[in-house]
Amino acid sequence: MDLALERTRVLQRDAEWAAAASEGHDLERVLSFWTDDAVLLAPGLAAMVGKDALRQYVQGSMEIPGFRITWRSTDVTFSPDGNSRTCSAAMPSP
Image (cartoon, rainbow, N blue to C red; front, side, top):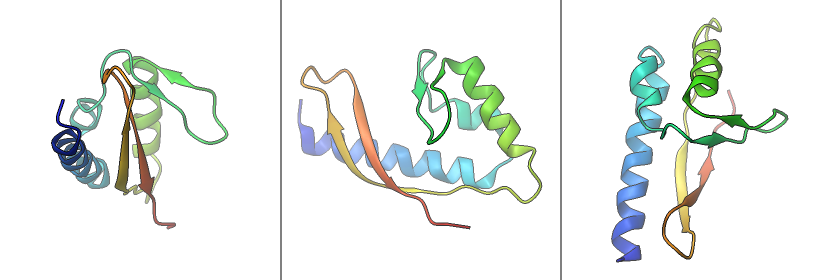
Protein backbone atom coordinates (compact mmCIF):
# COMPACT_ATOMS: atom_id res chain seq x y z
CA MET A 1 0.00 0.00 0.00
CA ASP A 2 1.30 3.45 -0.92
CA LEU A 3 0.54 5.27 2.35
CA ALA A 4 1.10 8.75 0.93
CA LEU A 5 -1.38 8.09 -1.88
CA GLU A 6 -3.91 6.54 0.53
CA ARG A 7 -3.60 9.53 2.90
CA THR A 8 -4.32 11.87 0.00
CA ARG A 9 -7.35 9.80 -1.04
CA VAL A 10 -8.73 9.66 2.51
CA LEU A 11 -8.30 13.40 3.06
CA GLN A 12 -10.04 14.13 -0.28
CA ARG A 13 -12.92 11.78 0.59
CA ASP A 14 -13.24 13.36 4.03
CA ALA A 15 -13.40 16.80 2.39
CA GLU A 16 -16.28 15.55 0.21
CA TRP A 17 -17.99 14.14 3.31
CA ALA A 18 -17.57 17.40 5.21
CA ALA A 19 -19.07 19.31 2.27
CA ALA A 20 -22.09 16.99 2.16
CA ALA A 21 -22.58 17.27 5.92
CA SER A 22 -22.27 21.06 5.96
CA GLU A 23 -24.97 21.36 3.28
CA GLY A 24 -27.16 19.60 5.83
CA HIS A 25 -30.07 18.46 3.68
CA ASP A 26 -29.23 15.05 2.17
CA LEU A 27 -29.26 12.45 4.94
CA GLU A 28 -28.57 9.52 2.62
CA ARG A 29 -25.60 11.31 1.04
CA VAL A 30 -24.06 11.96 4.45
CA LEU A 31 -24.66 8.35 5.53
CA SER A 32 -23.09 7.03 2.31
CA PHE A 33 -19.66 7.89 3.67
CA TRP A 34 -20.00 5.32 6.49
CA THR A 35 -19.85 1.54 6.19
CA ASP A 36 -22.72 -0.53 7.57
CA ASP A 37 -20.63 -1.47 10.63
CA ALA A 38 -19.16 1.99 11.28
CA VAL A 39 -18.66 3.18 14.85
CA LEU A 40 -18.96 6.87 15.74
CA LEU A 41 -17.38 8.07 18.97
CA ALA A 42 -18.72 11.53 19.82
CA PRO A 43 -17.61 13.31 23.01
CA GLY A 44 -19.97 12.72 25.92
CA LEU A 45 -22.10 10.13 24.10
CA ALA A 46 -22.19 6.35 24.01
CA ALA A 47 -20.63 4.74 20.94
CA MET A 48 -23.01 4.70 17.98
CA VAL A 49 -22.66 1.42 16.09
CA GLY A 50 -24.07 0.78 12.62
CA LYS A 51 -25.97 2.87 10.11
CA ASP A 52 -29.28 2.72 11.98
CA ALA A 53 -27.70 4.41 15.01
CA LEU A 54 -25.86 6.86 12.77
CA ARG A 55 -29.05 7.64 10.84
CA GLN A 56 -30.87 8.54 14.06
CA TYR A 57 -27.98 10.72 15.24
CA VAL A 58 -27.48 12.57 11.94
CA GLN A 59 -31.20 13.00 11.29
CA GLY A 60 -31.69 14.36 14.81
CA SER A 61 -28.87 16.84 14.23
CA MET A 62 -30.32 17.96 10.89
CA GLU A 63 -33.66 18.66 12.58
CA ILE A 64 -32.14 21.18 15.01
CA PRO A 65 -32.99 24.69 13.76
CA GLY A 66 -29.85 26.45 12.58
CA PHE A 67 -27.66 23.37 13.04
CA ARG A 68 -24.57 23.33 10.85
CA ILE A 69 -21.42 21.24 11.03
CA THR A 70 -18.13 21.45 9.23
CA TRP A 71 -14.67 20.07 9.72
CA ARG A 72 -11.35 19.66 7.99
CA SER A 73 -9.43 16.41 8.41
CA THR A 74 -5.79 17.16 9.11
CA ASP A 75 -4.09 13.77 9.53
CA VAL A 76 -4.69 10.10 8.79
CA THR A 77 -3.36 7.10 10.72
CA PHE A 78 -3.73 3.57 9.34
CA SER A 79 -3.84 0.35 11.34
CA PRO A 80 -0.86 -1.96 10.72
CA ASP A 81 -3.00 -4.24 8.54
CA GLY A 82 -4.42 -1.27 6.59
CA ASN A 83 -8.03 -2.27 7.32
CA SER A 84 -8.93 0.70 9.50
CA ARG A 85 -7.94 4.29 9.89
CA THR A 86 -8.47 7.26 12.13
CA CYS A 87 -8.44 10.92 11.18
CA SER A 88 -7.66 13.99 13.18
CA ALA A 89 -9.99 16.84 12.35
CA ALA A 90 -10.39 20.52 13.13
CA MET A 91 -13.97 21.57 13.87
CA PRO A 92 -14.56 25.32 14.17
CA SER A 93 -16.85 26.46 16.98
CA PRO A 94 -20.20 27.98 16.00
